[in-house]
Image 1 (cartoon, rainbow, N blue to C red):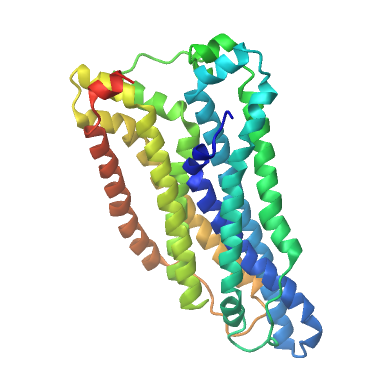
Image 2: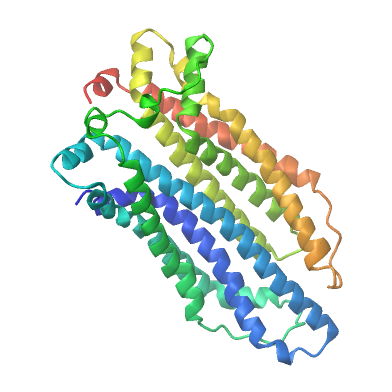
Amino acid sequence: MVVGMKDTVKLVGISVIAACAVFVCTLFLNYNRDLAAMQGEIMTEAGMAMYRAQVSTGKVVAAVSGGCLAITSVIMLLFYVKNYIDTHGRELGILKALGYSGFKIARHFWVFGLSVFVGCALGYGLAFLYLPSFYALQNAEQLLPEIEVQFHISVAFFLVGVPAVAFSVLAVIYARLRLRRPVLDLLKDKHEYQTKGNRRETKDQPFLKELAGSTVRERKALVFFVTFSAFCFSAMVQMSLSMKDLSSETMAVMMMTIGLILAFMTLFLSLSSVVKGNTKTIAMMRVFGYPYSDCSKAVLGCYRPFSYMGFVIGTIYQYALLKIMVSIVFADVGNVPEYRFDLTACAITLGLFIPAYEIVMYGYARRIRRLSVKSVMLE
């Protein structure tokens, strides 16, 4: 087998993101299905206003959160497929030289979809266990009739079965496309960016500046992950702090927990890939006398602007989403306070984000210091 089960263990980040996406979508979609069945029992005008608001909320949250996390999972899956092919080019080239077609090799990449299945199944199971408490929170004002939790096989099928199959097929198709390379390029471990002859010429720059630029250009997916990690931290933490008058403490804690898990998971995975992908470069820099500070600045520091850009995008996103929810979705529901941008929550979140991000960066800079030049050069 080209891809073994142990290779899918590295895809824990995809499993976590899939679990978070399915957890949120299960809560709101299952609630919407059960709530729709009780529509005929709602007799008051306030109850109908709450009903419409709850249904709209479920659709918005499932579409925005689920869609955002699904796109992230797709990008992460494609990144891991590409990374696997790049790091196992010689083995795959030998198989092609022996007569195996690209499709015969690529079809083994279906196991990458197992990480999605595990994450989706875990997220759905946890959400279903939490549904009774979630239903009670949604009807805290007793404007709606009591709703019993029902199992909907269609919800489980579309949130667990469909994503697992879709991601498995996507992994096979993308692997097949990535394997459309000459056998000699695979055997010589030539990556695609090394063979393109139409790259634009760059100006002569200092080595460290050129290295930082090439690190970003050749690993664009990691730029997305670093930006996304800051986005999750900013959006979820600010949203949970700003919702004290709009929702329950339990909902705020749940959102903050999901946001922090996604933020640190994607940040750890992306920075680990950055360090691992530049071990030989770092080793050569050490041989030529560059200090560790210059190594970490060139390899890790180039991602710092993208993290703060992600923080800004997350701030705008959470404000826009809460403003839409309060001003449009809950416009007909009474006793809903007007929402304004929470400058205090933004300041607190920024005050937490800066030291947290810099501590993680310092940890990976220390990891660079522990790299042995001899061990790297003997690989």
